[in-house]
Image 1 (cartoon, one colour):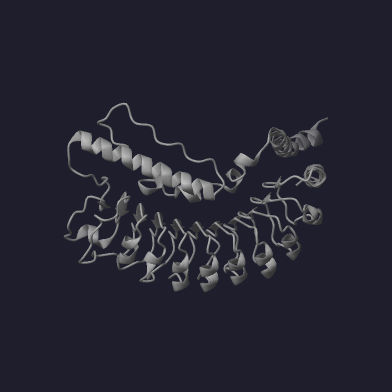
Image 2: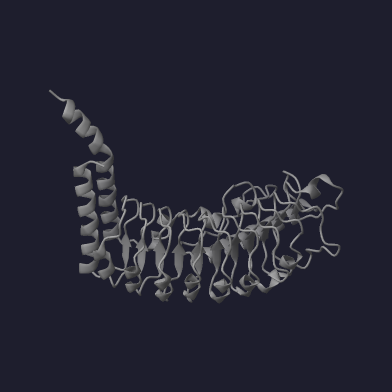
Length: 371
């Protein structure tokens, strides 16, 4: 980084912090500023509730960050952080926490002291086990730990009775607790791309379950008493790319074994009604999750003008997408509904400085070669 660019960037960061202090703002966005060390001045922003530090080059999170006791949202994803202070458990008001894409390798148990945490992402941090203390997060609604090295999850995790969105795809999970049904609020369970050999039958006792993604595991059979008829809102169980797909098996209307989507037989009018109900339930589930993420709710699905067209894609991730809806949300989108007109203007200024930062190296090159 050129000296001029570094000067502009550092002073702009300090100016943003000073404005936040002077105006007692509740939101401070310092994402994508190539910050390597959190400025000490930031720890005096005692009014801040939403702090965005994602997509920087931060390597250390000082204990002083726990002085910001009013924080409800903290994003630290896409940095170079290798450890977190044990005192992070003092942030008792924290609702949303994202520490994904950092070389952390472990979750310190103190994170589980965040008693008001509702949405927690720790994707691709090299995690090998989830601490049993996670069962303390009584309000947890959304948990994402995709792309780690997990082989199992602790029994204590099934105590999360308010958990609705669980994403553990792209791990090495071989076994699950037998009492997954204790997660009675579970709506979306993504366990694809793991090493499960047995179908997690206890998940079928979760009355709110809509999507169970088990594709690309090692499942070769279903339980003898397999029955989904009592699951009123179930949309799909995805079993593609499992050994069972190549073996003799009974077809079930809501189980997907191959690329084609499962369908139920019946008159077109009945199918259309089912599709409409499906879309409505899907939109409701996404809206509920959006509330937990502090995002604008997903609008209700509009009826298709052609009744013969069945819209099954209420959640693209459950059909074709390689990313779950709730985990494809970038941290930068978490602050959408907090921005006032003044904050949007300041954000545009920040974007201007970032654009200047991209142009300056080229300008300096021409300046140095000009005769």
